[in-house]
Picture 1: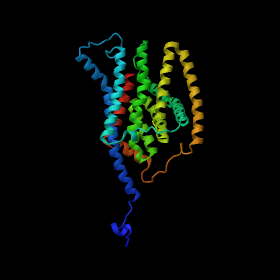
Picture 2: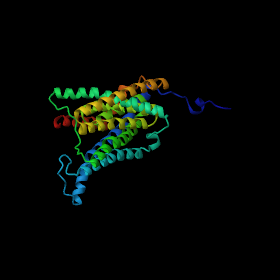
Picture 3: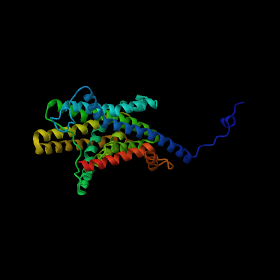
Picture 4: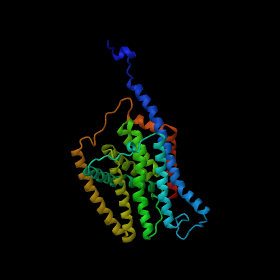
Length: 340
């Protein structure tokens, strides 16, 4: 005679949603703690890598080159090689260690599913347009800093007009960051948070992406850019759109800067305004295309009444790693206010 599951294994008592939510909050705090400590490690590695390079060069007999100011005793080429290596080591190494320690498959954490050429391009153009618009609140924060007596200026990397230096500068700001920052923030962070809800993962990863930049102006910009970059990853299950958005945004900054360097302020304004118009038009067309072809692209998710976004964000930062990241970001931001 066949027995029902209830009589064979005892009575089944379903877990109340509130109890389940509490369990998930505890689990989220542990996950967030690991993610935030990994992020802190990455930031310290990136900051300290130049000092490591200086110590190494002194150990092998390098006396330093101070003929170009601002390059910390490096030649300009060595400076950018060290910065590029610092990005790669600082962000990629902790990310890979995180995946290995938590037994996370790279195929799962770094998705590159085929989403279709048109959809990927539409996501990239839409995201780049959002990044253009994100400059408006970022500029407002800069003006607010000036109103309080600070410079409102962002830190700038030293530069010369030599072609090898400009090439390495382009690689350092427009090629390497889109690869390693997407590996970390849309890989380590977004992947780790998605099991607690895609909407929360998008917002949480964007907040950490903003804090990572360590100054109030870029925090605002990076948060908004992080929202759209995480969104396109979630909706396509591919990192290609976010990498493209990151590359377009940073590449445009390089082009505008070079137009000013070699053509003056008038050329800079013309190039900047032309690019903004082109990408805003492409972004608007892409927005319509995505809304028509993917009805769920901009749709929110069902929210558990016992585990809302606010509770998830509390769990994200109410842990030792989360508190440490917040403190580091705030202290770094105030340091920039007084230095620039």
